Image 1 (cartoon, rainbow, N blue to C red):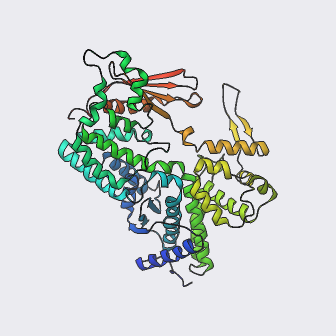
Image 2 (cartoon, rainbow, N blue to C red):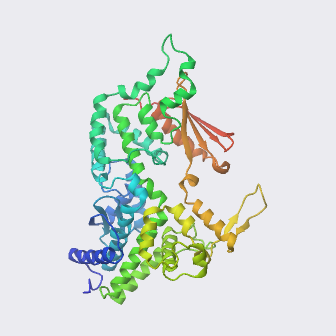
Image 3 (cartoon, helix red, strand yellow):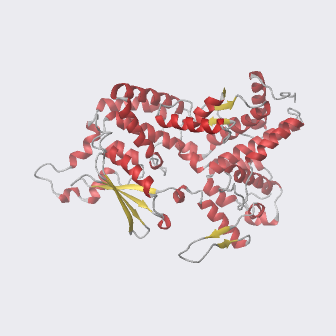
Length: 511
């Protein structure tokens, strides 16, 4: 293959050659399936701006984005933080932002990493296929930006900002975690918003007509079971419940909540696939860059530059290193992909015992493509973390529970039983049902003061942080318009703690 570039300089013709060479290897040799790619070169300031607005190319304005921009810029200018070489958007076409300061070698690396590694994972992984609409996200973001701007012009910047503040605080608890609803189609959302406005507030107030206002209704007619069924309780998607049933929000505020929860749902799969997503992209760029070198497209010097950057990305500090803060998803994901490749092509007897379905089958890319399509971090680690990799990464498990024993004990080591336990516990640390708070709306006191009642199912007795809980509940009470009660309960339904919050009324002032 002809040399793609010489030295560090590049132009757009060079980027095109790099992209085409990577595409030939990715599609022809690795068998990847990707969205069309849109490569854009941006400046340092634009990269920081993308950081600050959750990496989306179109987004509405909000004060928090400006705050984040100032923080990131100050850290970058003082040398306390570097910037990513790229940002990639899960859309069709797949938008890849490249830093203008990158060398030609780094542009080749990030095109291989983002335009083909991440792109393939976005298009093929089942979570992204179920929960995101890559075809419609850019159009929907454009609609959201226009809608927020119109609301600010009509209802005032301050009120819109307070509504978005409250919605942002509840984003993490405003996703549908289980499949069962129709797939989100963002292209239809703008038209649906117009139809909802035509109906007006009457559509949102139907549930509240069940509140007794005169003779003929009694408590039995509004039993707990009937009330909960009418309201669709319990409900884990808090913004969805507020949007549909809050008795006091204006229609435009409900649409803002809808926009925020759609965006939260869009990012939901990324939180469950960090190790797999980054591991896939790192493995793909490693294969492509080495193949480019084998074919003479990049020089030995460029390969060494690439390997230095790659090594920094997959660096994993040891447990006693001051820099250790858990497992680097790039390091763990890449190591597991390489280990699976070894198991498929050159297995040991131990591998054949632990992985009989894939050991020695010979086609590593076919196995990896199947894994990339059908697993998330928790199931991927639980299924494919091998004893050999556990030994190589020197994994072990500590037990620290003052209620059971004094001091810290080594609970799992590198033996047959320990391998199973280490793999199980590491997988659990990536299980969203285990690490994220499970909070649900369980009831509303329609007969009385309309208090909203929520339950937090505390895993292993772990209750919520007091200060954060108070601030988030305040935002929820402001949106609901009445008191909010949050009970923290354990597996035996024992109430561990209660939090009560009263609305301030600021959000509802002009509704």
